[in-house]
Each structure stands twice: as structure tokens, then as C-alpha cells.
Amino acid sequence: MQEELLEEHQLIINQARNNLIDFEIATNPKYDPNWHHCRIAQELEHIEQFGDRDYKILIITVPPRHGKSQECSIDFPAWFLGRNPAKEIIEASYSAELAQDFGSKTREKVNSEEFKAIFSEVTLRSDEQARGRWRTQEGGGYVAVGVGGPITGRGADILLIDDPIKNREEAESETYRNKTWDWFTSTAFTRLHPKGVVVLILTRWHLDDLAGRILTNEALADRTKVIKFPAIATKDGKHRKQGEALWPERYNLDALEEIKNTIGPYDFSSLYQCSPILTENQEFRPEWYKSISEEELSSMQTANYLTIDTAMSKQAQADYCGFCDNSVDKENFWNLKAWHAKLSPEELVDNLFSLHETRKYSAIGIEKTAYLWGIKPFLDSEQRKRNKFLPIVELQHNQTAKEIRIRGLIPRYASGSIRHIKGRCDTLEEEQIQFPNGIHDDVLDATAYQSQVVNEKQKSISIHRPKSSGYSRFR
Image (tube, rainbow, N blue to C red; front, side, top):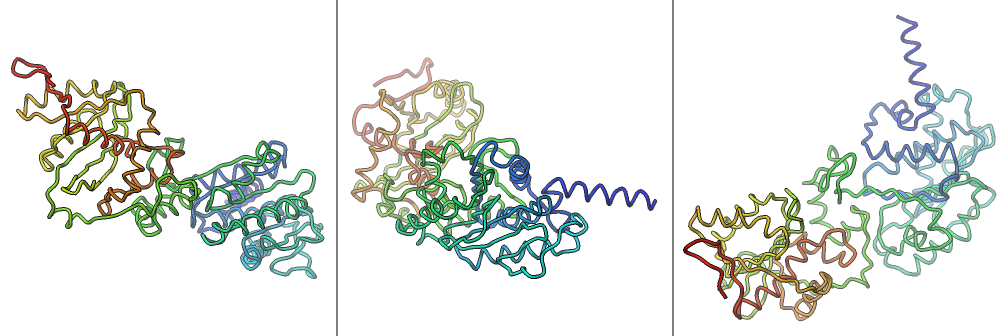
């Protein structure tokens, strides 16, 4: 029994020596890593083993409070020095105080009994153990500095830069961004040893932040690898599907939605979705947004229009469809609510009847695509069964590019003629902020089609009726 315990103990030690995640668990029993921590650990282990063989700079973008600093700036330096006590690490952050705090926590870990049980041969020099500057007996060590500060007398096998930007004010300052870039290129990068690697860990604030500068620099971009973890998945992946949270045990979708409502879609896209927007290049300006409450709108006489971007092929069984519901008042203001939903053809048809029952649309516009013909049999059948016939308008894109259709909304927004119903246009605003570089635009395209259906309703429009003895298509 005693021998089995000793064997198990030795196995744990060996695993901790060789694997970063096992080291983190062994030195902190409360540590409960998520899959993205394991993915980051794999990349950091690759750097420890191969140095700059495959890339010189690793950029890791992670939302706030998702464990990036604990893993990258505290646990990894301790594990790296345990395996390489003669090598050197420089840690930098937006302030010297924060960098030194990382240094202090890493030093405490190296001095801990748990660390000594794993790396018994590694000890710190007694004459150099300041929280921001300490050395091992083998000559390696750790230096903590603030971004922009001097780095003298030390080189780096690993240059860790954790959040070089403190807040939105710094991010929006071109002077500060230039200062950070100058420090990186003239001071920090020059401290790397021949096989040294930069690990930049950050939440993105701005397209022109340090990560953005690196990725647009011809000399550095080809030597850089990026891994990013948006708080809400933008596409299906190995560990989660589109729309799922990164770390649901800590921040589930409800919590993330509350955060987005608090900080707004602009900062949420940058900080939590790892997709910063350059405000001066936004085509849909935030100052154009006007709002109206549902209570205010309920007292107005309106004509109601629904437009739908099916955003899928005829063969697709379930994907996101974009919806825009427009209440046009007597003064020709558009009052919008917009959303998307993942629906099968049958579910979409059922939704159309439910929405029309409540809203009594003057027209329901659906893009005339392969998918429209995919739902047509269900729609025709349901109309006959229910003896209710929807005012379907077949929308034509007429070979006009989607971006041009969407930009057609800009004059109406700029004139103050569109109002968003409070709390009902979050997805639309998020897509507008990222236009034309966003991953998704299904809701925005559905909104753009309002221009066609509202205008065409005043003319002679093509109305779709199911073919039967009692009904025919007419103009």
C-alpha cells in the first residue's frame, strides 16, 4: 500500500514537471481549468520545448476574468523556470505595480512547498528576492516592468506582456499607442535572447493596439501566431458550438448578456469577443441611434412590415434567420426591433403565422432565394390548412451586392429617421458596429430589405399565394 502511494505521488510529480496544467493543479488544488486553459497550456509548452522554432510572437486574446493572467503570468513563469532555472523571463503590464504583483505571486509559488516537491533542485538566491526582480541559484530569474519602462541588465528567453492597455482612454489615445509601440520595438523586443519568444496576452481594446500593430507589420506578422477565445463562440468548434459561452461554469450566456447590456456592444465586441472596432471607420455611427420604448410606440398608429434574411441554402435544415420588424408611423419614422433565430423551415413557417397574428403585417418580405423555395411547400400547405394567407412579398436583390443594400440604410439613419425599440435591437447594433468586417450580417441584411418592402408596398408589388383552384399569383 505504501509503495502504491509512493508510485502515485511520483506519477503526479512527473506529470507536473512535464505538463503545465498538471503543474497548476498540483500547486493549487482549487484550480479547475476549462478547455481553453488546456489549449493555452499546449501552446506555452510548445514554446518551452522549441523556443522560436515556429514563431517569434504568440498573441493570446481572452476576455476579462477568464483566467489568462493566472495561467500565463503566474503559473507559466514558475513552471518554465522550474524546468529551465538558468533562463530568464521579463514580465510587463500596463503598470509597473501590476507587473510586480505578478512577480510577487510567481515568486511565492516558486518558494512554495508544492513547487519544491516538484522541482526540488530549484531555489532562489537569498540576496535577490524583490517582488519585481528575483533570481535562481542557477542564474536565471524574473524581472517585472511597466510598459514604457526601462529594462536594463537583463535579457529574456520569454517576454510576457499581459494587458499593455489599461482602459478605453488609453486605447483611444494615438499618443499612448505610439508610445507602447515604440517601447516594444526599441526596448522590449531587443531584450530577447536568440531563441526567445514574445507572449502577448491581452483583451483587445482597439484595432490599432499592440496586437494590431504587430499583425499589420510586415516584418513581424509572418512570425506571429494568434489564438483567440471569444466569450461567445462565433462558429462551431471542437469544444463548443456557435453561440455557446467560453467558460459557462463561470460566465454563462445570461451573465454575458448582462455584461453586454451594461458596457454596450462596442466594448463587448472588443473586450469579450476579441473583435475591436476602429471607431473612426464605423459606417453606422453610434450618435445616429435614436430609441423609443414599446410603451410609446403602442400609442401610435403604424403600418407594420416584416423582412427576413433566411441566410441559408435550400438544403440547410437549421441555421440563423435574421428578422426585422418595422412599425412605420404617420411621420414616416421607422421603429425597429430586430433579432435572429435558429429555425427549421417548418419552425419558420409557424413563426410567420404567430407573428402575423399579433402584428397584422402589411407585408412580409422574404428574399427570393433557394431557401424561399425550400419553405414554399410548407407555407402553401399551412396556408390552406389554416385558411389564412400571409402577405408574402418576394424580395429581389437584383444583383446588388449585400454591402450596397446595407449601406442604403445609412442616409435614413443619418437623418434621424430610424428609431430602435429599447432592448430589441442588440444583435442589429452589434452587426452594424462591425460592418462591413463582421462575421454575421443576417439581421442587418433583413433590415436593409425594409427599404424595398416599405417602398414597394406603395406601388404594385408581387404577392405570393399558394397555387390552387381558388388562388393564383397576380400583380
